[in-house]
Image (tube, rainbow, N blue to C red; front, side, top):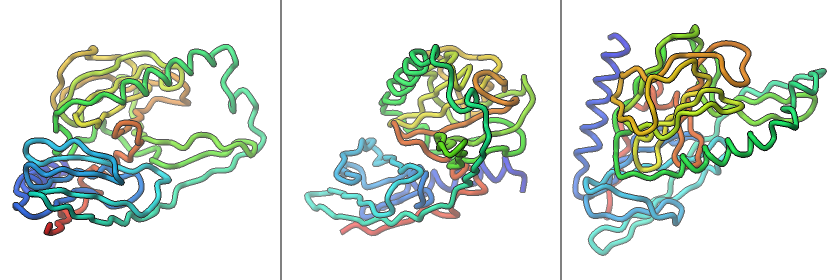
Length: 281
């Protein structure tokens, strides 16, 4: 079966599973592992807490949460429905990440110049602010489309240690492609940011609802502007080599608010075959 056809089939099956939650069950769609986005459904009208943090729940009972690269393994959901509360322990698996130790690197490649420190801080504040956006949309429920064609050249969680100094881990999925190659929206959404940032170059951030955003980095050109509404499969940009990079590629990232998650886990070939169903009292 072709990849796009498989994606459409899985999308339909996952949507049907999430939409058909019975009156007394919790449905979890996603791998219970570090870096995973979990899309879930409870009976309409239920309230949900993740580790005592209240979560937004749609009128249809949909909600979402995720854990980061180095998160603890033990977590808990609390569901309140029809006056009853149930605590549901969740155990996430750990992951092994590719760590590279490199010595003898020139300092200019280890730390950015001091004169750009203020710009970097401003960029970080701006991105953090945008990723705090909340909308009631649930556009993230479908299986996402891969936003560019090409081989995977970098994976989530990998890290380099230059001259004994750890660099920040890589929090995206790198897709090798030539400058000008199309970048497609993985889900429907709304453009929240389209700016040139120091590290990530031309950068787009797209809102998919309930704190879920996609980020696209090192772009050559934008095809959209802030405030535009986009649909899955629509070309939103072109692959580039802007920012701090060694060659052209797309760096695609997924966030749940400030939690940095692994886009690859959402693609059809990595997604679980079926959602996990947990009976509710």
